[in-house]
Image (cartoon, rainbow, N blue to C red; front, side, top):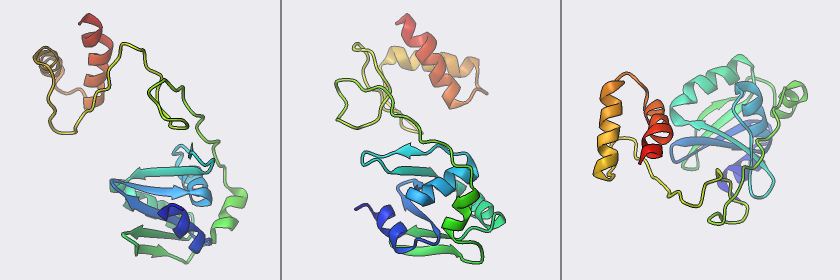
Length: 173
């Protein structure tokens, strides 16, 4: 049993958020409440449960939202409760009237994907690319294309630059 699910079962009256890496995760009813309140997507796990998460930097905003809606929550980091709100309604009461979005359907799989693992469909001639937030190494030709695009549109967000590379740069090369 996963840590998030275990803590959720121990605390059924509260939304349980557990820090894992750079994201807070919720499972089951906690995930439904989080998705219903924030509009974040629910995702089905390999076991058929639902989960939802958000970057750790958004925690203050999420806690404020739960408190405004008066929903109990617990925030865990390394098996320790770091934030708690218990002046609101219990989780099941909130879920009775909540507008819960349907879970995100699984995406297409390819032959390189383990059974049940979610991924985007890829073409056979594509290779995986790992991007590191600050610096990454790549072939000189791609680096030149990146530099030209980023200098040309220096105010463009990183996502837009990558989109341009994928749509324009790699298509040409």
